[in-house]
Image 1 (spheres, rainbow, N blue to C red):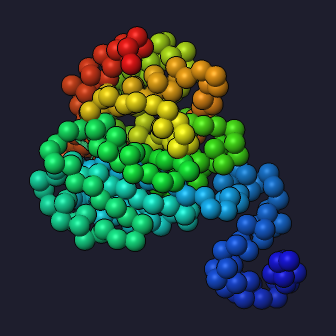
Image 2: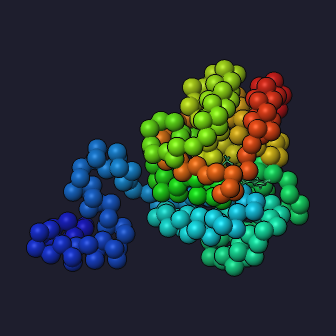
Image 3: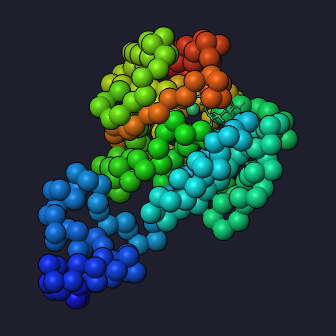
Length: 280
Ligand SMILES: Nc1nc2c(ncn2[C@@H]2O[C@H](COP(=O)(O)OP(=O)(O)O)[C@@H](O)[C@H]2O)c(=O)[nH]1
Ligand SMILES: [Mg+2]
């Protein structure tokens, strides 16, 4: 079937590489034969099911410095996908950049007033048509190159939800100690109430089968989104959602570079953990 496999590698490597570039469908069988099943799985090399689509939902607020490069990185991920950007009434020129990016496979929703990340995500989730959904912040802290690893447990049908964790071993920019502590405290508190053993509840990289999102009603408008969705995923029974955590790299930014989340949001997260334990 794949004649490429029978071509002598050492004789004409350039030719083989050209063929692989031209016909992506030959890449997986080729690499599988070359590296073997186990190595392929470890490297995140696996076949994407026919017709599969990833929905990338990006909440944006005043990110003119980063958003163009971020969108380029998302588009560069070799997966079939749609991109839904929700602009939360940016005032720094982000809107004009987004308008110029609109087009093939990329939609932009313009919120009429600034309402927060949670409200933006709700607006974006209403439009998704993909099989799997990933939340992507509009800065460069998280790396879209991690998508192939993040969706792998869902493609394998081992998971319904995947959290990308900044605390399980991949590369990290060394930055604010007290943010790290706040993250650990909030994750621990969330775990105590959900009985999940997550290491990074506040991660931006939360990935869901579309059915999971369709099953959840979200209320939080701002950064309460993270504890809320975690609590609601944990509450699901019959069947309970299967959750995985995957190490991701994190290139944190400083406040000078545009970081917006702060102490107030940690306090909101704290109360959201309590609120969504008992109320919906
Ligand atoms: N929609 C919306 N997004 C926001 C708002 N504030 C921040 N964001 C976005 O939320 C993401 C996370 O913000 P950031 O300050 O980097 O916090 P962190 O990455 O969660 O620590 C970025 O994509 C921001 O553009 C807001 O008021 N509304
Ligand atoms: Mg960020």
